[in-house]
Length: 128
Image (cartoon, rainbow, N blue to C red; front, side, top):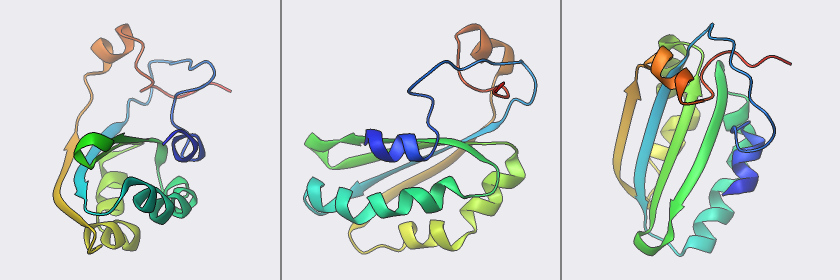
C-alpha cells in the first residue's frame, strides 16, 4: 500500500536524517481482513489523510500479506501519550469495530534508540 504509506509520511522515499534526539514510540496494529484485497484497499485508502492528521504521528507504513488476508500497520509517534490518544480516538474505533476486520493485535513498543539509530531506523527527529 505504497500510496497510503506516502500520504502518512512513511520513510520509504528520500533521505531520512536522524539527529539522535526525540526518539519516538511505535505502535504495531495487525489484523485479518475478511473481504477481497481490492475491496479492502478501496475501503481503507480514503482513511490515509485522517491517519496523517493524527496528533503526534510522524509516519505510518501500510503493509499487506495478500495470500493470508493479513494487514500490518506500523505507526511511529512522538510520545507514548500520542499513542494512547490515537488508540482512544474515533479513527482507531472505526478500524477496531469494522465488521470486515478481525483477529486484532494492537501493541505499543518502546524504541531502543542507540541500536535503532545504528541500523539506520528513521526514529529520531527528521531534519528538513
